[in-house]
Amino acid sequence: MSMTPLDSWILKKTGAPDVFALYLYQLEKFRETLAYAKTSSRFYSKHLSDIEPDSISGLQDISRIPFTTPEMLIESPVDFVCVPPSEISRIVTLRTSGTAGPSKRVFFTQDDQELTLDFFHHGMTTLANESDKVMIFLPGKSEGSVGKLLCLALERFGCEGIVHGQIDDYEAARHALVSSGCTCAVGLPAQLLALSSLCPEIRLKSVLLCSDYISKAVTSALEETWDCEVFGHYGMTETGLGGGVECSGHAGYHLREADLLFEVVDPSSGAPIPEGERGELVFTTLTRRGMPLIRYMTGDLSSIISGRCPCGSALRRIGRVFGRAYDMIDIDGKFKLSMPMLDELLFDVPGLVGFTAGIAPFEKGCTLVIKIYATNGAKAISDAQARILSDPDLGAPISAGLIKLRLQQCGPEILPYGNVKRIIRQDAGL
Image (cartoon, rainbow, N blue to C red; front, side, top):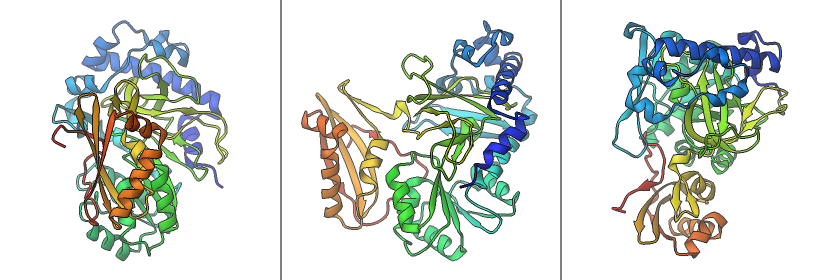
C-alpha cells in the first residue's frame, strides 16, 4: 500500500517538514485570514469586530472566534466578498435542500479555482494514473464546474477524463460507460449503484463516490458488481469543492490541510469535541481570496482521526461523514430519523436499485413512506420491511407507534434521482 499522495503534496506546499510544522503553518494562515477578512469583507469587519488576530496564540484559541453559519451566507453573500467584482471568475448558487427559500451564493477568483484544481490533480492520483480513462458523472457543462475542473486536473498527470454529467438517462449513461472503455468512474453513490445494475458485466479499476452520504452498503455493492476499489471524497461548494479523499487504507479522509483547517464541535453548544468523538464539522479557509469563510458550520457529522494511517501518513483525517445534522428528523424528542440510516439498511437489499423517503405527520408521530424501486418487486419490499423492523433505531419508534411504516412498490425501472439532494422529504401530501 502506497502512502496518500496528499501527504507529500501538503508538506511541500506548506514547507512543513512534519506535523508540528504544519500546525504552525495553519496557525499563521488562520491569523492572516482573520486579518484579511476583517479589512476586506463588510460581513467580517462587523462579525469579527471584537477579535484581534494577534491574540490567537494557538489553535486552542480558535474556539473564541464566532461561527459563520449558512444562514449568514444566505442573508448577505456579497458582503463576504473581499475582492473587486472584476476579480470574481465564478459564482455558484446553491439552493437550500428541500426548500424554495433563498439561495447561497459562493464566489471564487481564478486563483481560488486553481487551488481546487491543484487538490484534484494530486487527490485523483490516489485512484488513477496516466494509463486510465475516467468517466465523470457530475455536472460539467459550464467553466469552473466540478466536472470541468476534474477533467483539467486529470490532464495534468496525463489521464483522460470524459464528462457525462449527472445521470438523468440511465440507458445513455450505461452506453457511455460501456462504449468508452473507461477504467474509472466518478459520481454520486445512489446513481452509480443504480447504473451498476444495468451493466454488471463491466470491470472497473476504481470508483470515486462524492456529493452525498456514502454508505457501506453502496460501497460493498459496487466493489462486488464492478470488481473495483471504491474511494470516498468529502467536500462541498463552500470548501471550494475539494475537502478530503480516502486512500487505499480506507481509514478516513485525508484532508486538504494546506488550504483548509477543520474542527469538530458539539452541534448544540458549539464547544470543541475531543478527537475521535463525533460532532459537527467546521472549517476555515486558509488560502482563499475571493470569499474566505471562517469557522463555517457545515452541518455534517464526523470525527477527527489522529495517529498514523495504514498508508503511513501521520496527518489528520476525518472519519465517515454521517450526513447533516439539520437533515435529521426528530421523532417525539426521543428518536432521530435520517436518510443515511435508511441507506445503510436498504441499499444492500437484493434487487433494490433505488428508493425515496418522505414523512407525513399525524397526532403523535409520523408516517414514513418509502418508495421502493426494485427488479424483484414484492421480495424487495418484504426484505426492506424486515430490515427496518429489526433495526433497533427504527424498530423501537415503530413498535411504540411513533412511526407508521408504509412501503410502496414503484416498478422495476431505475429511479431518476436527478440533481436533487437525497433527503427524507417532509411532505404532508404523502
